[in-house]
Image (cartoon, rainbow, N blue to C red):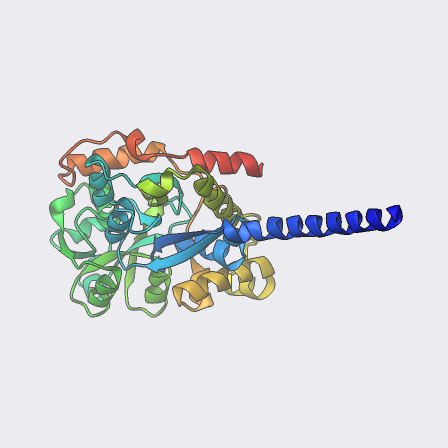
Length: 350
């Protein structure tokens, strides 16, 4: 009788243990957090694409939902108003104006920067403008450059290039066309004289002869072009913010190691054939940007291996936007930088 009771007790304990195991395995699913991520189909969004495709976000209990935009400023507005949880795009005057007004999109991590030899943005002109003598930045005086919106990253880059050439930023006219696709259409149809174009579009246009190159931006300006930033509400969720960053940092490392670490001195086309790690990353970017892999491979923007934000550049940007009339109110850079979730994620991945 005692033996039967012991067997029944053991059976009950076994059932309870199995039930407990079932509840534990279900907890990650129950804890999965949906996160709306606003971004553009640019190669600088590569770590987000990689993190989604390789399951890094899923492993952290994050379910990212890409929300596609065609300009940077609407992403900043959507993030500041909590319409999306995470923004990933260029650092515009509009973003800083929102922060100065108390609607703060908190800058967390790098999403692309201009550095020598690894530019992701290119100042180009139409063949007609080139034939008419526009061969250098100084030749742009009086010409019209395509732009998305006043105070965009494109205007920031163009302004600095013009100043370096001894011109005022107002030496050119800006056609504010609202979105990237409109700028590209105006450029290829000859309605404007030039524009700053990001990858993967720059390589496509240069390869087909639809534009002429004046300069890669990174050769003349070191600049934190883009960032990952959190909406005010999402920034309050320390756990979710850290988990998102853990996945993002892992993806940044994959991107950096595939593209920049021990890069062989061979053509991009040859790398696609012989380098499996490089090919995997390029093909992921190709799918998300809807651009042929060969075009993607020609010029890939620099992103810090750990996704670390160049925080010292933020104050410089604010100062330039303020001095050039794109911001009405001053803003301390520290007020819109919140890298604690990045730091916590980085420390946990060491």
